Length: 408
Image (cartoon, rainbow, N blue to C red; front, top):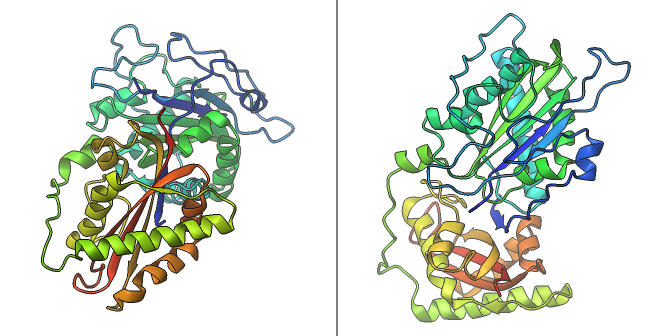
């Protein structure tokens, strides 16, 4: 069963890798950041160290952590809940609440910092999931109002229970980070709390988890020890929320048409592109990639689907990323623990030089180049389809799928 991550603290490329194992011992960095580690089976919250309401020195953002859960079957028990508890009443807005404008600025700034960290880790950016903002805000305000600092409230549902009640969670992948900071301005609060979270392994794991696709951010004035001082921040991470899957029409697999490239063209293109890729890896002192023909149908389908439905992104209109078709093909997790995707579109009808132009374009981008030269990848597959975003009859759309960490 997959883990479900919880953590608390006082673009044209996609990379996915397996999750690290859990360690129940306190992490030194978490301790340094004054974390309070929590096991998923502990029924009572760990003690929170009290701090003066107005310390002489600026307090560091304060973290506490708990690791993610497995993709459930819809009936996953909530951590630390022994029996149904009465639903907590949402805290009412007061004159001391942050304004909508403040919250909007804070969310925008925090999202940028999160996606910058993911880009640096070679991951796809998170989409913002505004539907869960009210839950993230409630979680932050509730901790301040009822003076606790935990993923499990004194009574009532935790964040997963609140998401489930709103129809946003069905036992799938989710995670929560929380942090208390002292800054008043949204920009400073963003920098302070993000730095504390990203420097803690448990919280960073949520931020750079390759299987999370969406994030919501809540913020409330005050901290559990003092409702008039500082701010409490909550980040809620989700992997392909059910509401996104249910409301989008199911995509029909793209069918071959008379304008598709011939099998001979595709074979020559793949061979030439593989040569460019391995030449670049050799120059960087990295082992050559083997070609994985089993992933060709997935790569071709991705390229064709983008042309057919007029989008250019790692995420389909239904919110599906490359891990799903690779998993269905028995490749991701069954044969390889990590994968990545590069995509590129080239205009014009000069197909003779298309492969070289595409390779040069990808190598000119730091993120795509990182995938091409990543020593952790061992195999590659290449898909190609006629057409691009502006014209389905000319140009080329190319998809490179990198695979690594073979399952032994």
